Length: 150
Image (tube, rainbow, N blue to C red; front, side, top):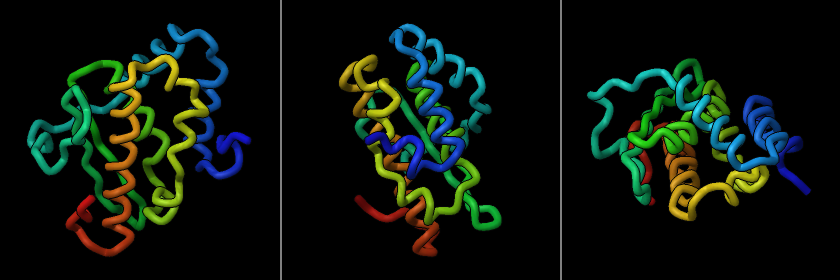
């Protein structure tokens, strides 16, 4: 059974469903590139070591802030497809409480069908980006501004 409709927050579920409707890998790439174009610019000052996602071949940065009990992410990558993955996750997870984000299991990545379209290193990078976003949410949930170690 797919996690898409049952456990995912509405915006993330909608994005996953959008990818499921695209059977052609080229269409999935085009969808990612569309997300990449929509991603708001990230300040250069935020592109520092503590915001860098480890385990990605490209340069990927994620920041998070807590406003009114909701997490807001910013991100960027030097590779367009990866930037699309970042934008996909930001769009799906922004404006959620940390408690909700840390409950999300990464199996929704499988539900998108992207894993078969992505190179193994990009698929792994997608997982690493998601894990970093969860880790930042966990830091807010625990009431710390310092992010927990691996």
